[in-house]
Amino acid sequence: MTEDRKCSHKAEADHFDDFLEQQALEQRLGRIRHKVLVMSGKGGVGKSTVAANLAIALALAGKRVGLLDVDIHVPSIPKMLKLEDVAVQVKDGVIQPVEKAGLKVMSIGFLLKGRDDAVIWRGPLKMSVIKQFLKDVEWGDLDYLIIDSPPGTGDEPLSVCQLAAPLDGAIVVTTPQDVATADVRKSINFCRQLKLPVLGVVENMSGFVCPHCGTVTDIFKSGGGERMAADMGVPFLGRIPLDPAVGVACDAGTPFIYHYSRTETAKAFEHIIAPLLALSNSVATLPTQTTTNAGENQP
Ligand code: ADP
Image (cartoon, rainbow, N blue to C red; front, side, top):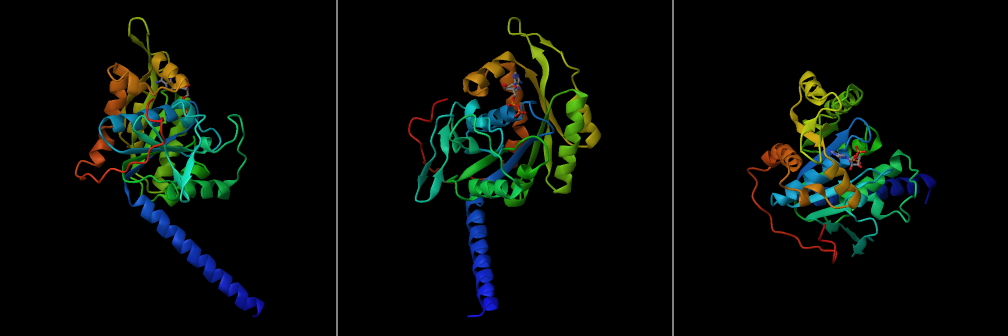
């Protein structure tokens, strides 16, 4: 066989593999009703906290929810849900998500050998691991897949938008200060370029809840997220105060809203899921899947 002929056979085989992969991806995602990306302009604004608590609020509202952490360099979802030492199981070549607090969870953090390991990957490798998380994880039938993306507009959110299209939209998290809201404008423009609807902006750390008397004090200038949302013509979903109980719950790996569902802060989270719940108002229920990693159900 000539070299040219061999090459054309190889190209055909590659093409066929791509086709099969694409089909597998579509089949897996076809069982997920709503896919929502949680983004932020910069780190430390509480994006993962919001993503985890929104996911749990949806699960508490009776929805079947997956939480996918595509923050490859700083995956904080395992820590937030106290899942740092969990080993991911693979059954028949399919990765089993870890179950916790009614969520199916997957994160690159589950695959790292040591908690302090640094991931040094370029864009194509990141895209291929995100593809694997979408295609090879046994998500089953889900009402929502909440995808926690790293801050900014880099490879990870771009890969998610390309691989999981069409997404229902993005929730963009900011703090009230100008320096944070300026970066969020870039996130909103990113969504516009990719034709990803912006479901709304959440202003986190908006005012401080006194742990003694419950009074809320605006330690940063508040309302910056709301003003920016109005300026950019996107919905404003609400404010979540800086509440010491949120930080303590996060550090302890006990999801805040699961344990403090009656507090004002939890109500703020619940308010924010309204547009997500509205996405599925007209949708009927699918049969429930049972894939449990024993002992991982309690937060
Ligand atoms: P990001 O994902 O934007 O980098 P994280 O969600 O990891 O940010 O949050 C950073 C830190 O801020 C965490 O320690 C978290 O517990 C804390 N935090 C986030 N939101 C709040 C809040 N509303 N009140 C108190 N602490 C918060």
